[in-house]
Image 1 (cartoon, chains in turn brown, yellow):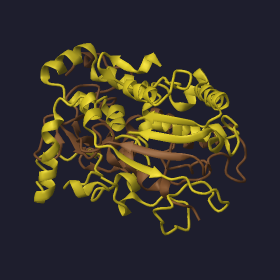
Image 2 (cartoon, helix red, strand yellow):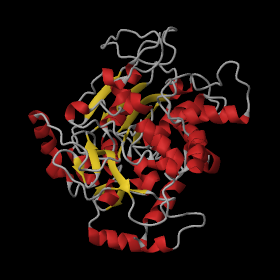
Image 3 (spheres, chains in turn cyan, yellow):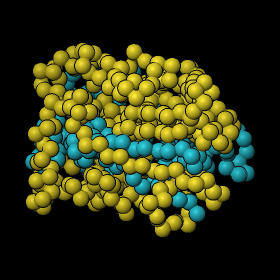
Image 4 (tube, chains in turn purple, red):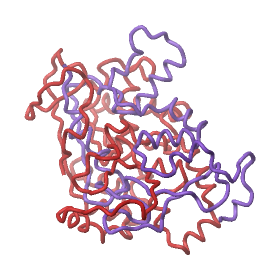
Length: 170
Length: 281
């Protein structure tokens, strides 16, 4: 238990909320993971998802979709797509060249082994990485390693340049 | 520019790039460092710092002054910041540069080590204030860390960074894989689509690992410890993927393609799922 656990912030208890417990015994893919984050930090996640799109559905992001009324909410929704290359077509720029450079061959964090946390304030901070787990394949101190440049996984480095940005729309 | 050439002596950031550009004739009037406050989201960067407005003006100035289109290089999260800029700059709800601004002003975009679809460590940072860097600390360092910055403090800090959510993994299971398979699984036995694993270690059945995969994984295991950023930069086998600019035609709404790699054209503009294509390794 760390020293600060003695004084939890107001409203924080030592119980893991029931709705979190259904997640706490199984493997989670990325969609489950985002769903869990929404439960653990609902206020934060709703703010995040207003500002950041995570969807895969590229459209023209320079205008509001046809027929959508111009409200502050719709404009915010449009801007939320701009930082997600999976949600927007590239700008029409046939004379512009794109180069994607990246390194590979370094173990790169791709997933985590989690368990119930051993400290207090569990309603705020219910889980922790199982840093005591290392296997002989690709788990090091509770972190599951994949292919990448040591910081960014290969899929994130390469998918756009190697594939998505080479597609032609018809 | 001096702000981001060397962090400390011999720990280079953009230093070598600047030196090499100088070798081929660039001087300080032709180079511009567009540093951003990495704690802020893109929206806030424009709101507080007029970051994208300044970048647009600077590119327009370079273009006008030298009579040539501009090359933009980005690193890591900078790739996402520039991706945002490319949408912002043309839109009437952003820089209002019009539909041909990128084509007119940008010669090339060189995206180096871009975290384009996010990184899983944002999840662990938001969930528990942890990541590989904190998991690697030994017990002495953990003791020191807990007494200086507790997990609760780290959690509060990470959750306050507006930039961190911009690197949450994008694209859902179509990109990051599911419980049974992920795009990179040919290198690993467990599905890397499992982002958070709450099974206890003893419950997860030991899987038989094909020999060639095991060998490949063990190849880079010893390098894992004490890896520092400069190693990464020095050791990488760089892979260059060039998306050649195509002839301007009206039938290409928004994407460029490589003429040397003809693709069977999909009938919609949805990206293909990454499982259907190998990444070049």
